[in-house]
Amino acid sequence: MTKIRMNTELRNKLFNKIKNVFENEDTQEREAFLMAREEVDSQYGIASTLAKEVVERSYPTDDVATLRTFKKKYGSPCDVVAKDKCFYFAHSEDLDDEGETKETKSHFDFGLFGNLNGSEYSSDDGRKFAVAYYREELKAKDCNPDIFAQQSENKDNPHKTKHVDECMKALGYSGSYGSGGDQIGMAKEFDNPYYLDVIGTSYCRSRAIACTKNEYEQFETWRIAKSNLVSKHQTWIDTIQKQCDQLKIGLKAYRYLSEGIELATELGIQVDEAELIRTNSTGLTIYNPTNLASMIKGMKNKQSANTREAKILARKQYEESIN
Image (tube, helix red, strand yellow):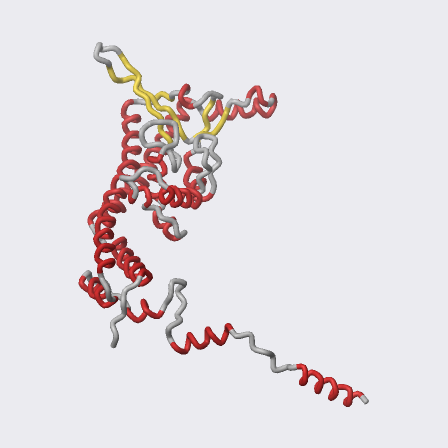
């Protein structure tokens, strides 16, 4: 039989099949990523429970209820209670170089896109966490949640921007993240459990909430777990990217499909050659003679058997039958 020559479509099919195997292999890097995500869930449970205790210690629920009663009675002048999911926690148990007590504080955002370095402003760090946390859900929506990791060495570019925007849209990112950010979908579902009642009308920077040093360190442990997930995701995708780079070079050099099939076999990946060559880029099976013939027949605009002559005859028969 004549050897089947490689073309761009066949290379892409082989590449995607092999890459999919790379992404689902039980490697140490993938396991570390999955474990890091489990640790995030655990730390979120601990930190959010602790945050509720700390916030309600500063803003007792009875006071919140009273102020809401006043708001209902007097209106906007008493509108000083709001829900928030980000807080400045502070403790004063450390000493400076001169032995004086100093305040240690930082911004902790429990939202999906919350910054990981203590800033109250949104950044790529928060978005990197979001895509890593919801990686499978984004893949299922035909998004590329690995785009930040794949483009870690590159500046912003149209390719990166396109895929980041698709991920953010799928997650429900409002585009104006913060306490007032109106998230939807997955982002809203993620954020909702972490809102707490706070008293005051100022921004979170000026309402540092007192906590102990141990409590503060627990909040830091939770935030570190989020950063670790981003790091483990990057490490895992780096290993896949390196393999894929070599895979592209090899497939580009191969002249015949059989060489690509041999490569897959050597990698322990079973690829059905017949499936590759009988489907086109839209996934339609067209090279099988029966299917191709059926497709072509379906394209024909055949004249109906009910021709003009047949209609005239039918009309005559009808008129004779009623006379």
